[in-house]
Length: 117
Image (tube, rainbow, N blue to C red; front, side, top):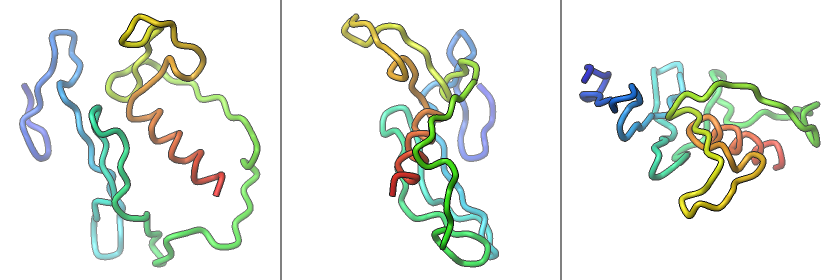
């Protein structure tokens, strides 16, 4: 067990956090604001839009050169940020990106949806 920012942290025998949950924070001129959360149970939930320092909550007249592009993301398996599993909970094989789950995958999927808007 270790002291965390808001509560006592508990770790499994292999060193992974038990029941991890994270707050998604936005730094504003007035200070920090919680705009979302993530846990293994609820996945990524955005409660408020991200606000930039100038007050805008979206990027205006921005053309992304990432539209319709495929990016390859390289990472290490580090629960709860990235989990890797060859089979699902029913023993069926997983393929492609379905083999990965966790906080980072949820964030990347959220960003991907934002680019499609």
